[in-house]
Length: 300
Image (cartoon, rainbow, N blue to C red; front, top):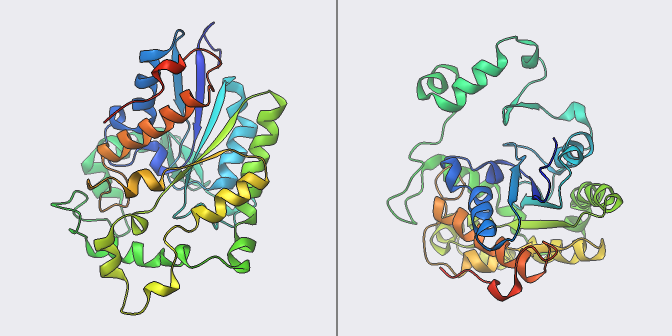
């Protein structure tokens, strides 16, 4: 994809958090970030959202290897959701699905000549989703308040509690593959002298005390460290020479309800993430002078 002369291009890799599940495209952190950076940049800034719902670090690495470099990015950001990216063990393409128009599909489905039309309709039509969805759906995506949890949501979040067990050698062994996959992206980016930054996205289990009260039985809390797995990931990414931005403190210190019952961010959550990423990019001077450092923060 040819880049317009003078344009600063950011490539985003990630899963459904990066895609912006259940929010309008203009509300995704990718779009908000692009708007923020263009307000202060001397040159046009383009943020390319290459996220695909359900992808894992292996797929981020494969996409960048085969397609991402063709965009000639000036900066690569990896949206790393700790809820399912941390301990991913996918290492082979045959373990994965592929993607059409940002939606995961089986490899067999890509042989259907109408697959692109079907995916388009699925993404844009409630009737199509109702007709084709064969699995359980998340009811009540939006909430009345931060304690309004659906039954399906609680089941998903309960299954993720083990991500926040206290650090041990077992967890460090299980995270090796994810660190390796991101390191593969870094090696390719280094060949082109492109900065790579990992964005660590928190799970709501870590930031919503009312959710913790529902999920944890009496006496269970001592088993967990809700700063995990970020504290471990920050150490291991640092050892691998990969910069990482931890969004957990910012989400934890925000009193608003930033998640929906499909486990993803509200528009406010995306806006918060965009501001944190914006500040990091500007403060670290990752735009090579395009963004003046004197305008290095965006206030709520």
